[in-house]
Image 1 (cartoon, rainbow, N blue to C red):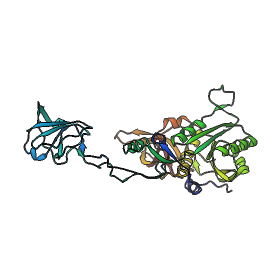
Image 2: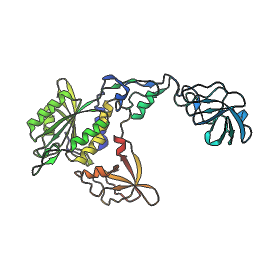
Image 3: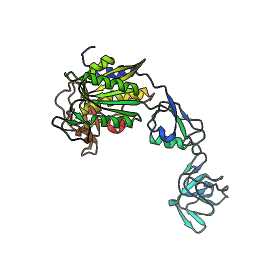
Image 4: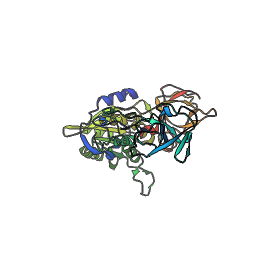
Length: 408
């Protein structure tokens, strides 16, 4: 395998071409579909709304009866939501509430604020136009229309929309099971007392949150010490129960970095070392488990590098494996509110926060210490700014901004 650093775009293209899409489909109750990827498109069985209804509290009228300003009409009926009225009598108005069916003979609803009630009459202060404040049948969803496509990842608003169509169960791709393994003699779980030279495991918690945010099942395999034998045992065991394996640490070039060698002993390594910062010591391959090849991602040990490589490479891979249609992390272009005088030596992702300048325009502020071990930078930031290879940054330069909100 070449030791040359691999550009991010080339690495991502390679990864996505190796994806074997998950073909297992399960039928789940609607609440359990959150975060899952639809296996079949969803269509509307009826119009939404299924009847013309009032968009506001007010009075249903026929505009032929409201030709003069401040006209006064008798109120012939009251129609509440969930109740059908009778056809509107000519020369009258119907008291109507939001969501109530529009009675036959009505062509407008005058909002309550534009009327003055007087016992059993109402004075129309502002003349309506035809169609005003009436929600027509099917104006939201038409019967038989496709409302969600196969490959869509379900969000809370999608659950509500399908529920409005009476859909109680959907077919989705089975959630992937992803195993997380941390490596390092110095790493211990939170809750224990630190001995000299030890650090707490943080990477598995970050990865668990990212994976669960994608709607995937997480298998935490714990911490493996720096030995080739134990690393191989842990990887082989994970391959027996997971659809994908992610490790952190142990993929660099140190004498105690055994993950790369263990993967080559148990399967094959397809990618190693990226031309990005942070995240250079990234690796990808597979672990053989009988006749199956279980995808493997070896992420760096530094926490910011874990976050960046997962976001830019692992996340789109897992989304495509689930059959998801949308793979790229959402991004926008925003002006820099900072300067970087030294040209980027690799494609760089820096932690930034949204700020508002004196002109009311949004800009990006960069965290002071961009080291890949500085976890506080991730909690401080609103997202990542991409700095292309060789670029310096001046205040006012437009940068690609990847908000964290689009990743969860």
